[in-house]
Image (cartoon, helix red, strand yellow):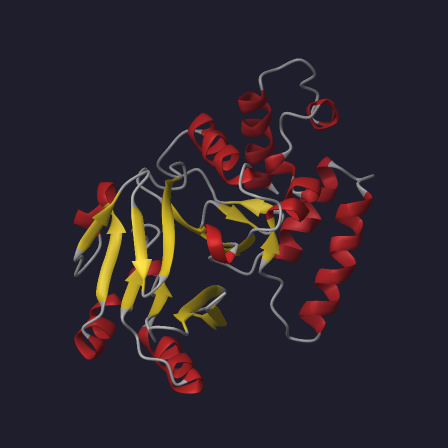
Length: 255
């Protein structure tokens, strides 16, 4: 594989990611929370920014676009349904479109719920998915513009990706997410092991992402709302999975 990634913190708890194609030299920033950390990452790697792939319009994912484009003349790719809310857009994408970063190729997956036009970028050949604020390590984004049913459908799309797909999300929320998840599945041993792992990573100032789809399917309650044991844990045996998801999300909002 020719894909390389470089992960770093932006703002308070946002993650910035650079994706680099070693064959062509093309480099994409996945979202642009702020310019300075992205430029520092470019200097550290020696890469040159050619593209910015935007997952959604929120300011903590787009705040650095204007400055970066002014300096690097980078192509800005953004979800078609949110292009009017995102600065300096050159190309818009929808479900089923393909985006190339040098020799690397991503399928665009529409994942509305957090925002109405949110997208994820799945680099199948490189086993990478950049999911913004739809799916987090042991969590998911708040349902701000969409509905719980919409968000559940989006999470099911991501859950269907191959188990070895590495997920890069937009924020470092893992430990807080685990504390909540254990109120839903207190006996989940995989989740307990993830807590030990995450505590060690945070103590060593290491990121808790990327995570794999397979690992999330075993421990993330937001991906497990259609399991009878999870429904039972929130008193919703026999209810539709979308309703169970909505209840779990509502509990997380209050947690």
